[in-house]
Length: 126
Image 1 (cartoon, rainbow, N blue to C red):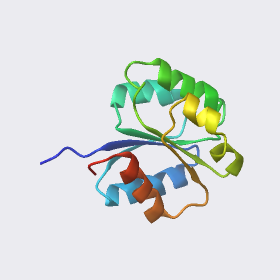
Image 2: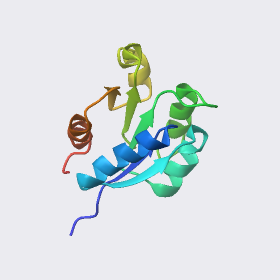
Image 3: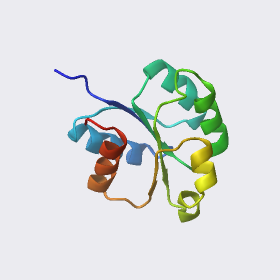
């Protein structure tokens, strides 16, 4: 039996994080939730997720800092990252997305089925 793909869901809104994690579990993924963006790099290094679903707006730490930390670590350098944001301008910032090799950017509000399909697109073989 194949091992489940692991997704780290990072969102400072616990209810949203739980909702997303539950929907992805229903699609056959293993999920972990993190509500403190300052811990994303160390948590990802420890958990070794197959994908990081990262909310763009997190208290105490900016997106660039989070992405820089993730890409600086050998353990997380190549982990696909999907951003979640309510700001359409972020999705249009191709240079930032390319600079940090972001795989996809999902706009809020989003449909959970659409989110799951996009996750599957980023994680081939799921």
